[in-house]
Length: 614
Ligand code: G6P
Image (tube, rainbow, N blue to C red):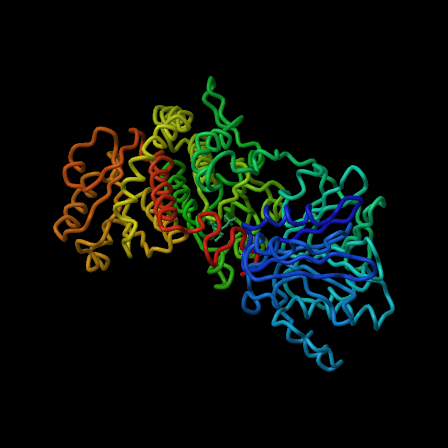
């Protein structure tokens, strides 16, 4: 939610900042802006729209500078126009800020500024923050760094901020609470800071993940200083990034989303890599191993997540209850955190999050921690806030996911949940040896099977052509494939803007059946395992109402093939594996429809990949 970049050093700041913004655009693309330090002044350029619009605007302008900050916005306060776009300047024009997050007590801070007669230009909480910092600076006679420490003690909310000040040329001041900020330490003593590591990787692999309530000052060629808000010096623990530039590029695909769909054989493999001992038939999840007894003795697991990660949680509920016989509840982070949930010390709370930064999931976990639960994380981004907040966890290792609509992160989450369910079932003795070994064998084969499902792409594209102008879609599944139906509907909604609903197939009778007519495409996951006969009956019910049926079936299926308007075959596999396979055609269908409708697949309107506000 909003991407920020800052650079100070020997090189020209503009190309580094603009390329950095492009990498962070998945975090928001309502407006973009840049502030550059030039001969004793700060010049700011900003515009509504995307980073490319900003680039266009800057053609022919003097952009020479060695220190600057930049921002790509997902609007929270105020409509997305150029006035509300970041960077914001303080009233004197001396201090510039970029901010990701929300200042909750902005109205209190605003009152103090209004009393001082400060005129605000925008409707943003960020402009209030920069003016409040300037006010503290002027009143106390401190420098920007010290004034930021003092001011932030009075700020309630979430922020990652980067500031620059004409009175401190060549210097960046950074701070964080609740929203991510990474500092890259360049070889030449230069610094590049950003919301995630992607803009940094080209310059350096040595980074520091700023922690909550930390403030830092960065001056080229000088040692970085990190302190608490009380000015206590912190010894920053540096991390070496395990990322390559290739991983962050489209690699010949038109969109990141398509690239990421096609990466799934590899990402699913990577999420299992080193975790299965094929000869001994043993699964090892190193991160949670020390807590396994605790988990086995727990009363229940509560999985929390948002969006696609919540859907993975629902698959996890099915898998863990079925294989390990541990009761599981799945909660939206946003609901859980605000409804005084019953959490006991013998509960294990599992946070699932691709980004590891989703504000509601993070807050739900913090609440559970306060109540004494053991916290586990299933995150994709290494070193993310959720990964650090939890007691232990399992990384999904799907690699960077750039497309806003999640694809490979989902299948990696499901893979990790299946590994976890199998491991716990094995330890608990709730799964017999034969079934355990069969599932393990199939899981190891999953990358190959996914590869095969990807071969249905052309066929899915043809189906997309038939239904691209539909205004509604229904997605149905049963058992472990019910969450897959939810996920399929979400993908279509997110990127094509076609209304779609996912439903448990049998629940169709209790409402959605009223919507079915000859114009309603209904996508049904009807694989051979699981409640096949029941789903065949559901298909007949749709057929009787003239609905158009697109069915995901097991290879060689005859019965559904006769009833459906279109079938997409996936390889035969145990029911527990089917979400990994059935999801793929649904991702492709959403993708092709969105492309045919001319949508911006990687940056769908109003969405952001990393939702760091509640
Ligand atoms: C946003 C994204 C979704 C994602 C959800 C949860 O809404 O657009 O794709 O599923 O956040 O994100 P997380 O990083 O916690 O998995």
